[in-house]
Length: 179
Image (cartoon, rainbow, N blue to C red):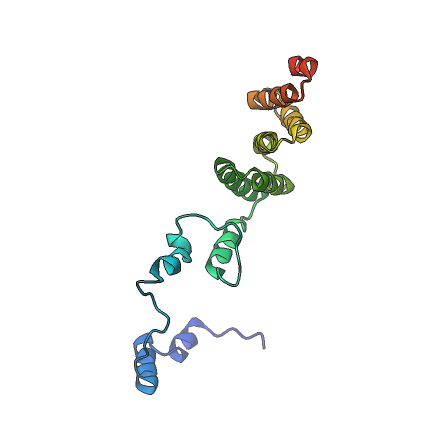
């Protein structure tokens, strides 16, 4: 217990890959690939492979898409809060482009939870969440997020625009002018 074999002893204990394959084929014989691709199912099967997906799934199912789950975990396994927050921001932006505003709000919120020290990134996350909330009709939330963005970065023009637009939708014209 606790003993780590040296690389020299490991190379002698691991059989050569060619020998291993030859041994498997000799004992089991060539195996036919069962449930392989056919003319009827090849598009569906290829679509399950993350590299070949033409559109992202709405929900990631660990049972049916273990490769996709592994890729997601790698993406958010950044060493720094800044790296994780940036990854969440990029994902939120993709969701926003697809008009999936509710999911974008969740993802931007996750980015803010990372408590990164990059204040510009935090201001952008608040501002982006304000835009997503605006599109969902959550004007008060949009104003709160725009206000937070403005506190962090007082010259952030988009934060002013988001806050003013949300106040305008609420018919709060005096508030709109003060923005």
